[in-house]
Image (cartoon, rainbow, N blue to C red; front, side, top):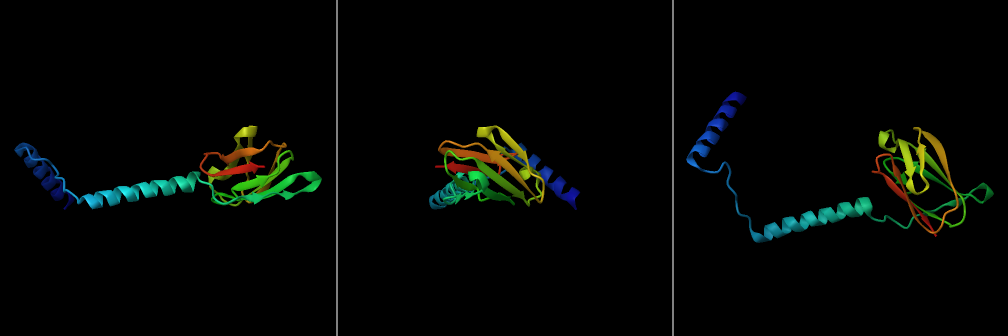
Length: 154
């Protein structure tokens, strides 16, 4: 059956080429439909940009650990939770990563501003010590830079 369909298609294409007809034809669409499709496409692009690059929530404040160290546990399961962490400037930080996601992408966390990389074993807690920071935002991300978070220092 497939060879018959292929032969018929090839014959029809050869006949169309020989007669000078195009292999396909365009069907004009109403202007309103063209505008609606373009608007829907732009809305989807905007939603993707917001999802991957936008701010999601005000962040979670780190707690007080021993010795005045700011401390917070970040669960790694399909993303970082919390992904935005509020810290106080001028105090050292301990980030404790608890990785539950088995994917290789989140097997590592990178904090580029401090040139720090940490391997995250599955189903374990691993801590990363950072020095006191100046006010600003310090991003962190997975090894493939697909999963992201930010340290917001005020």
